Image (cartoon, rainbow, N blue to C red; front, side, top):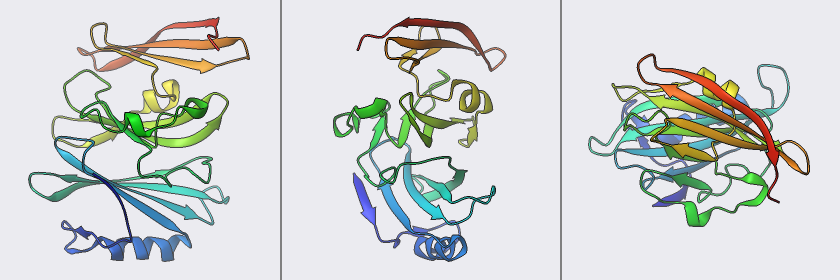
Length: 221
């Protein structure tokens, strides 16, 4: 289930309406906020995503903060709040509640358009092959190469930790996820006729990522 809400949900952890949190955020940031609640992207969590448009970011320019509230389905309690200071985002980013995708429940695929390499604003997926769901949060709308993401991996305690390597080095959402080889492959438009393909391999023993291939291939377009 996907819904657009006028800030009336309850943050059970803080014992006060989520609406109050959003209103305080809007007042503090001098912003306009929109919230979408996603209950069908995960078997364990519900995700509430809000884009808060700030007049002044940390660098002094206007921008957006993406707030992701994660709640445990069974306990009906919030477990974490993620706040991401985004880069450049199109006005339409985070405006459509169906612009999401889940590789866990296979929801959202049919709702997404494939324009400009779009993968969705929020993606639920197991990125490091440990059987736990992780999330990708759109951090930049990008250009011809497609949007960039911040990647959060779930630890054994159920907390989502931002993966610095994937967020900065891989950056783009993978075109291929190979569970057998434990690799993530990105295809990024380099020129009109070429695509830059990168392959990132995960080593479970060390919990480290390594780029094992960087090549240019002919674009299929």
